[in-house]
Image (cartoon, rainbow, N blue to C red; front, side, top):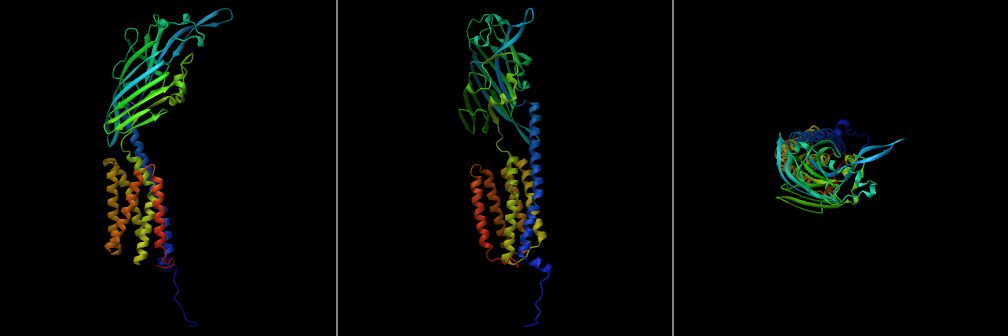
Length: 443
């Protein structure tokens, strides 16, 4: 009818009834909740750093990760230096690496506790044997008469001398040699054993010694021989092999591990023998390229898993909000925006629960505790809001599915991306289905 007046909808009324505005609010709120989520990730990083500090404290008290270096045969020789009117004699060193180097190590591991943190430590006996080949001086331009054979010495080292439990002795073709500290060895700080080679007449020089030592977190070796053969075993069930060479053979089970390396010198970054420079084996880059070994990885790294879980925070929060939004649309029972904020806060606190409990009982049990607690809290809250137990149970089931899915993703490694992509595709399809009949202007 002409002149009939229709009621005008106020702006505040539209804001209360508009599904579009509610959805925009949900999106903004989810983005804002990324701020406390970032703080939680920083907290996880801080706690992981604290674990590293505790590991270093234990290492300082017990002994650090060990790297077995050597031996190297060092023979002083006289070198003539031409001066203006005369020739001056100078003493330099000839450095020779082993022809064959055999190492066997057996690790007896244990876990030390510092507060709530764990550190893997070990005791081991490392048996080192092999030989130096006959002296080949022609390529160096040295005459055998220049060598000071009675002043020769074996030099070797471990990265943390504090871990040595007894003084090593070297067996060679002479009486037993006692090692002593050397602060100017080819390895920097190390050990040396003087040996008189005057009686060595164009023959190989064997060596054999045992290092009785302790260390923590890992045991590494330096490739020095023309042929380097290393055999390691231990009672640790979750080792990680690292360095520039992976083992040729390995066996890992619940009782422990064994691994073996056999390497030729073709890709070794050191010459077989050289003169003059003492720093060739004290170069960090070259040492890294020639070092390999085993790490005693802790079976569960709760901080890494908690960090990965926290990165899915926006995913879980958005899906939970959208599910709640669809619930209020379908049931035509509006939920106040402040209640969305409270639910979002509970879902953020979830990650602090996960972190704190994982430090005490491990990641898996902590995930169960945090998930059940959060789902129960939110579902009871929704039940009181909607006055409908079935709707609350349905929402609890949806949250449980989300958290179970994230847990599966965290456990997967190679298939995590594919499984996650398929799940997201299915979720988008479900949302498209339920959003078909929504009136985006009014509930």
